[in-house]
Length: 256
Length: 256
DNA sequence: AGGCGCTTGTGAAGACGTGCACAAATCGCG
DNA sequence: CGCGATTTGTGCACGTCTTCACAAGCGCCT
Ligand SMILES: NC(=O)c1ccc[n+]([C@@H]2O[C@H](COP(=O)([O-])OP(=O)(O)OC[C@H]3O[C@@H](n4cnc5c(N)ncnc54)[C@H](O)[C@@H]3O)[C@@H](O)[C@H]2O)c1
Ligand SMILES: NC(=O)c1ccc[n+]([C@@H]2O[C@H](COP(=O)([O-])OP(=O)(O)OC[C@H]3O[C@@H](n4cnc5c(N)ncnc54)[C@H](O)[C@@H]3O)[C@@H](O)[C@H]2O)c1
Image (tube, rainbow over all chains, first blue to last red; front, side, top):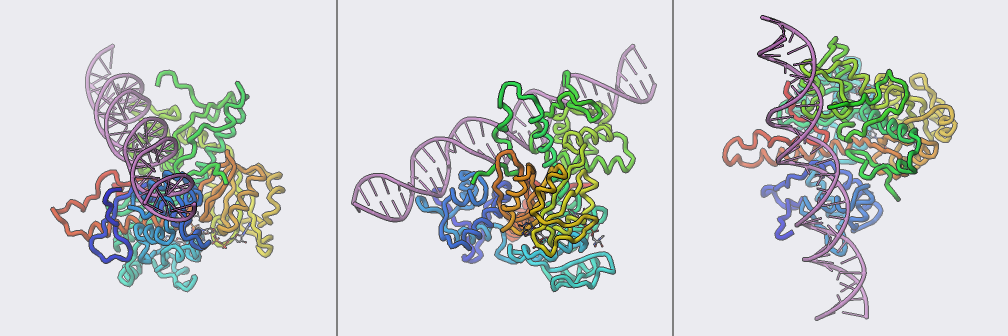
């Protein structure tokens, strides 16, 4: 509270945006709030309480309030948050006011699905290029975009200001592709290949690995099975899992 | 240390497996160690040091040692870890000794890619059924599996012991599908639809949301841009980012 | 056998994230 | 204008995670 400078509202002119450096955990949740807010806006809500928004986003309301307070938030006590304003704020902080260009490398099985996905456009991104190393794939048109050869990356980067590179190649090729992306100035990479990438300092890599998610679920299945298999020694001690079990990215038992 | 009971090696008979309850953060990393270990095994390594394995998995070596110590690990001081034994251990803890059956619901754009993905089989899972609500999709054969109607779910569950349900339907249908999965006894769900699911206690849900990953990357792009835009006051103070910046699921600047 | 170098396993400290509980602020209404 | 209902923003305490640093253990070489 006290004198909290507006951290750079979208409408304001340049003048040093003063991005507050948010806790990483908060950053990871802002997109969820944003999605929930868009749903609320579509449903006609003009304001929403922290209680309502946190329920829609599936988090604790105190956590939500603390997250929003980090970006010097615009709530009104006794009322709640202005939905439209909050959307603007979050989109600004996340850097979504500009439609960022994404280059998708590897137009195979998964790459085709990604290329045809409309969730890119509706959430602030634009597929600027499809790239592949297989000559037989080059030239193919998907969703209005023509697949180009991965060696054209420098040309593509010269035409467009690439913000993010998405790697959907086999693991064996991923490091090489990452190097090529870095070479043309890409500093953010989303990697679908199941491998660790080495990148220079200043380049961010996030990974999506289906098998890891399944294996984490498998662990919990295993644990649940070994618990219920135990002969109930004293009573129903194990029926209710110990509290605070959910963590990282797992949601469990969210009541309606 | 002291007398550490083997927590249930795969070869041993039943006798109460005694699954140690691992920190959630550790569970999330075990699959990465497992992948790195398989690579090492394929490359012919019989043992590996915590330093070597942590490098291959892209984490801090102390963290790796602590993670492994949680499962009553099998390292030898002065030598390292036996690769094959460690693989066995981790696979046991993750519950991968049985090939878990996965039901994939929603065989659209993304569902097709998942159905054709060989990473399932190679990492301990088996697609047991493909399900969709669209009558025109039912009957289609993908990778040797025939798409069945989602209303056949009870029949499928009766035939197979379904461990995990994967939801790849539009967000609007996801909750309903989740309810159907829960109704037939599925207690682990991987959700690709961008929405929050409500499930009863005891059911685990993990989500994969492409847009969230991109938006997190976008935030860091935004932040990096706003930093470099600043007139360098004293010198190269901002060239190196403050240490300990990577978090959650982000790897950054991993040296070779 | 003894010593030496290497590596594990872990205690302890600090950083980080979470959630309760409540004071401060705002609105609407009489 | 004042009051009560409501909701935000946050201090605080607690739990979890990370990282350092080092003693204990192991194998090898002499
Ligand atoms: N298919 C899925 O559902 C799925 C799910 C999770 C993860 N993945 C991972 O995503 C990646 C892609 O999977 P896929 O099923 O689409 O594989 P795929 O073999 O169908 O497609 C890979 C594509 O990458 C291209 N490619 C290969 N080397 C390249 C290079 N150096 N530069 C540019 N392009 C190159 C190939 O020509 C091919 O078109 C894999 O690493 C896979 O493990 C896939
Ligand atoms: N395509 C991608 O690359 C991608 C990436 C990330 C997330 N997603 C998400 O994954 C989901 C699927 O995306 P998509 O591109 O494959 O969509 P899609 O429309 O191509 O496929 C959806 C499929 O679900 C089926 N379906 C609809 N209602 C159903 C129900 N009640 N029960 C069973 N099946 C039902 C439809 O018949 C269709 O086959 C969406 O939520 C999307 O946001 C997709």
